[in-house]
View (cartoon, rainbow, N blue to C red):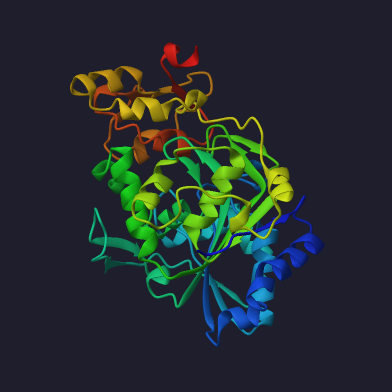
Length: 380
């Protein structure tokens, strides 16, 4: 069982980040020892949307910079690669790096930003639900990958961390094709785990200094969780983070447990902390996404096959448009994987009978005009 190392951190100041990166690699004998003679390192951040650091949605550029300088001092050759939720083109990649503060933060370092939109198909013969993926070329060719993710709640998967972050290996709008192909949450997370285990992730750094609660991964509320979790095993890392947030029955972790990729439960014994220290890291009264009111979605999921699926359909949350916030940009219609949203008279209209409840519209709406409407019974 791989250990998860937890560290307290209150801010992203340079001095804090430099100390943090020393702590990150210390259990492995330092950054140079961790590399074990390998040179080429790819860092996979979370740049899911063009939002500033104050949003809590994307990797903080100062943390990324500190990680890069630490690895450069250890003799690594570093590249940074990501595919965000929109179109996958050279210009969109450059724009995304710039908008998230990465370009400026790394401008004086010998670090390659992967801004050429190339992808390849890789076979995943051991996948349970899919045997191949189209992924971005830099990740497909990487020797070592460091997964630099954010700790967030998520409207579809409940929790987003290390294992979920590798979905960014799938280029642009291909992500929405996978949403359409696997509309059921159990199939979707199984696909996510097929993808994650196929990638050469050597280290996972989950940033919860400032994370997100509520309608994550992009439209939620920032919250200072005040910790960073580090592990060579993404599922162990996520299990510990979910425990600290008080999240139970996270679909992606349930699938990982069924595959024996992580234990049924985790506690302080899996970390570098004492029991009292571990308890001190726990987050109280986490705000869940609107699609998971009071955590009752897990009960409803167990009712999925009752009455031919009519019971679960009655309770399912639905995306709706706040007309006062909508700026009619059409992004929700553009990114809907099954094209259930159309622009009529310049206004978005959701055809609910075709909606697969992937919540991509909420995730990628720039003005946060998409919200999740839940059945009133669930709010009692």
